[in-house]
Image 1: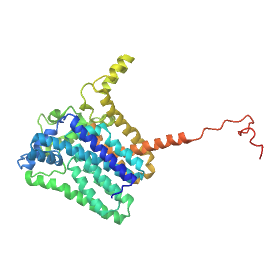
Image 2 (image 1 turned 60 degrees about the vertical axis):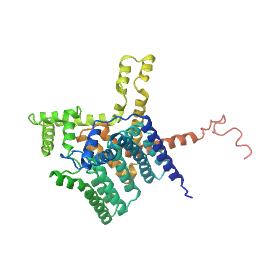
Image 3 (image 1 turned 90 degrees about the vertical axis):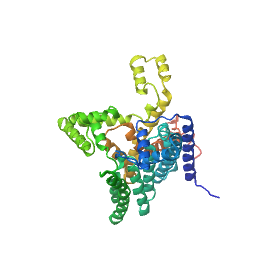
Image 4 (image 1 turned 180 degrees about the vertical axis):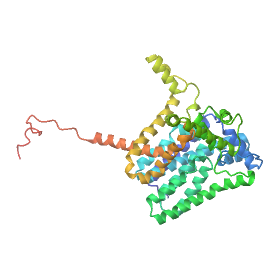
Length: 441
C-alpha cells in the first residue's frame, strides 16, 4: 500500500481540490468566447486539415490543440472537451506551483499556501474555463520552471525544461528570450564547465523544438517566423495606445501613408513609428509606457467577465457622490459586486504579499532567481510592448510563490506574538519581584 508523506498529502489535497472546483465551474459557469477564440479554432482547423493558405501571426500550439479537437469532434463537443481538458491543466498547474514553492522553501506550509493561492483563486478558475491560450501557456511554463527548480544539476531535466519552454513559446511568443536568462542563471549557480554543458543542453533543445515552426513556415510560405510574427503590433499599440483589435490596422494606416502594411513591412512600420515617438518626446514616451504598465499591473485580469459597471467606477461614484450608508448599500448590491471584489482581493493579496516575499528572499536571490527573473522579464518586456492585465497574468504563479513566503512569515510573526508571556507587573517592593520573594532564600 502506498504511503504518502505529509508534504505529498498536501500536494494531493491542493491538486484534488483545484480539479474539483474547476470541474464544477465547467458545469456552472457559462462559456464566454474571447475575441481571439474563433481565430484559434478556425486557423487550427485549417492547419490540421492542411487547408491553410496564409501564415498566422500567433503561436500555433493552442490553435493546433483547439482546432484539432474541433476537426475531430465537431464544434460543440470540442468546446466541452477543451474546457474539461483545461480544468485538468489548471489543476496540475497548482501542483507545479506547489512543487516550486516546496523545493525553494523546504516548507510544506509555504508550498500549500502557494498551491491554494492558484487553486482557490477566482481569476484562475475563470481563466481555466475560458477558451484562450493562457491556460495551456501557464501550464507549460509552470511545468518547465518546476522541473528546473526541482532537479538542479540534471542534464536530463534541463533537456525537458528546454522542450517545455519551447512549447510554451509556441503558445505565446512573449517567452522567446526567457531561456537565455535561465542560461545566465546556470553560470551564477554552477561551476563554469558544468554551466556550459547545462546551458548548451537547455538552449539546443529549446531551439530545436522552437525551430519546427520556423521550418514549417519556410516550407509552406517561404517566410521566416520565430515563434510568432505579431510583435510589431504589440510594439505599435504600446506606443500609440490600444483601442481594440479593430483599431490596429487603422493605426498602421495612419503611420504608413494611409496604407495597411503586410508581412515584414508591418514590423518596419511599427519600429519607425515607435522610433519617431521616442525622438519626438522621450520623457513622454517613458512616462506613458510606465503609466500603462502600472495600470495593467494594478488591474486584475478577467474583470470584464462579469457584466455591468466596473468595480472601480462603482466605488468612485460612491466616494464622489454619496458617501452614506444607503450609498454603500447600493454599492455592494451593484452588478456582480462580490464576484468582482473577489478578483480584486485575490489580485492584491498576490501583489502585496508577493512584494513582501521578494524582500524576504533577497538573501536567497540565486535560488529564487528563476521566478523573480520571470516577473522582471514580463514587466520589462511589456514596458515596451502593449501592457494589459491579460499579458501580465502569466507571471502570477511565480508571484504566488513569493506571496506564500510573505503570508507564512506574517502568520509566524503573529503566532510568536500570541505566545509571548504577558509582561510582569512591577511589585510594590520596587524590585520587580513579588513581595516576599526574598524570604525563605
